[in-house]
Length: 182
Image 1 (spheres, rainbow, N blue to C red):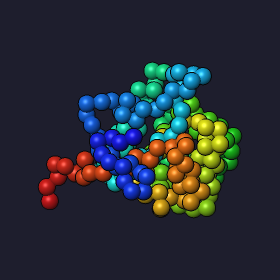
Image 2: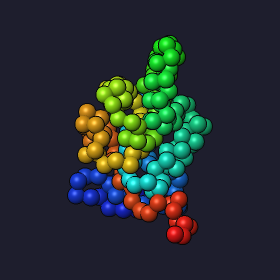
Image 3: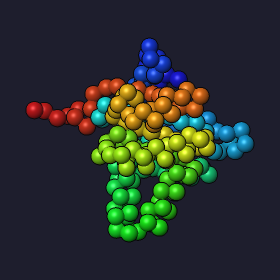
């Protein structure tokens, strides 16, 4: 799929936003044959700061709120901080409940993958979420400022699987800096 761009030599997609279509129709999350309102597959949005990745994730989450898809939007650094703080405070039950909620969401939208403070623990928690969703074929959308080559290898491997995931590279200037004068 090409969104106002061209396929790059790496098999990734170069994308620019089109305002004539909705984010859901642009991303074409394909409904499952067994459940026409439940999307399937993965979409990974990669690109620099301010290219619209979070905006698209939020638009998809909002559109899916009116379906039976049960979307869950999650900012990765905040999710991991919550898990760590709950675990450190001895609230392992709360931590486990939140972790399972994210692992098994109808449609999981992970924003800012790679913006978390990296440690063995954070990498393991992310891998557990992503690997579970990969193995179960649960629909997942991910946004990251990092190229796949800089994402933890076990996670990047799943994101490169073209049988399940579409990687869309978004380019352009930082939208938030458009009216800033130095």
